[in-house]
Image (cartoon, rainbow, N blue to C red):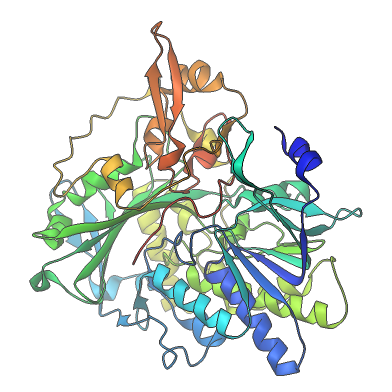
Length: 561
């Protein structure tokens, strides 16, 4: 049945009214909700706020490196330390390594560009930080609905955003309601704040509907693949932050590794790879596994045990690609807009700050009796904020690296080491990107196939055993949330021209080309494995794959990630 048929038979949907509805319970969404409630308490106003979170609980879908700059958290909750926020492990050292296949060159501390200085920052589990923020939000009156997906944007007759509808529950694979069927509900708001993270499903829709990206650079992304390890206490170096560039990346791909020592003998590590790579044979997952075999990385993991895995697409975060962030009845914050500092490898402080700025504007509007108009005070406040200044300082970082490792390294040195020493805070020039990531993929015939080594099950692993420890699960009898505009395209174009890149760029083994009985090929979609990284939605060369929301509560359940 179509959604229209379901509504005709089972509707209308129940509706709940709020002043502000926030989509996504990550650091940005929760900061928005917390800030509104803080302002309401200060001014003696009653403003109702609800946060929808598709994960089974706040933090379940949160994945980040993460070295966190506490600046925005301190602005939001000045006494966070006394309240027990899990920012426990201060950074104690920064190592920036250039890797060849077997060699390592460490950048001397005096030569480190400012973006790699992490003094005063913390190595954290962002999932745990978000759980704490959610508990704090609830303690001051924010309603949080975990396990509910925002599946559809609702509009008023004048074209402004009215709110969202949650997804239906209990729809079978065939699209028919089962015995467990439950109709979604509507949440109406004066203002709806979209905080879904990078490549947000609904954020993408409102950007298209209101032409918010007009005149801006195309948004560019990377995939981050991460593991959590428990190491031998003798190997623990709490607070050590390691970043690597060079091997195993070739010059036509942008990527680098990170390895951070947390408290309690935990090490988090991973690999970030720009999704503008050209070679369809490249597999980000396999590159990450290969990177771990380098002596400089493997040394940290001797006698260690892998206990967590996850992956997530991330914005490359150039302010040149920021869309207009407001539209009638709503706003985009955090990575839904693209407020990430790729040069500093940090986004949570930007998400929190953008959420606070949007909250200030929404609170002011609601208090003045306004509804469903543009929160123009939000982008105006951003332009004057430290966040805008910070992002502009680093606006060329990713774009220099698109020109190759040598140029990227040299120009980062000039912009982030030399110019500040000359008293020039912000580069006097601006680079621009001109094409989205998916158009960069070239036909397989133009590239040599990459033969990756088999995993050893100790240091390197396969996809399925990795997905297993991400605790990913979806109700099996539901329609696949990875949809195809045209079912013939994967075989006729993607397989024929690009050797089926979806079987390699997906870090969870969702896409698999298998043989039919008559020896023809078909694409099998193992939606059960999906970790909600959004890479397929971004990198599919034909833009034929569209990621839609599964049932609420499905997907990964990250613990300590």
